Image 1 (cartoon, rainbow, N blue to C red):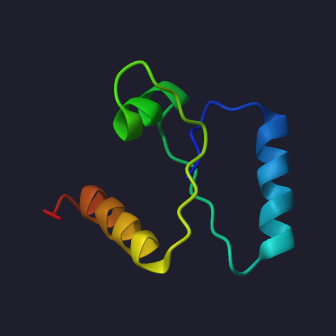
Image 2 (cartoon, rainbow, N blue to C red):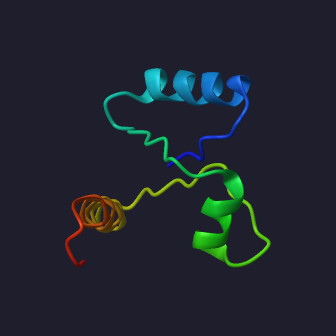
Length: 75
């Protein structure tokens, strides 16, 4: 998951990793800046440009939580 306020070079590097490791890797660019993402994940005054989730159960939980938020249904 990527914050949406990174530099173009950052996104090019991510794209290169996606091409190298496809189809095992998926990227989601969120409509949140690095401060909003960092605060959500790690608390106040923290920043996060990228969050990598690798365990399949954790990936499933993250995607289900995002789907629930998008559709407006409870988790």
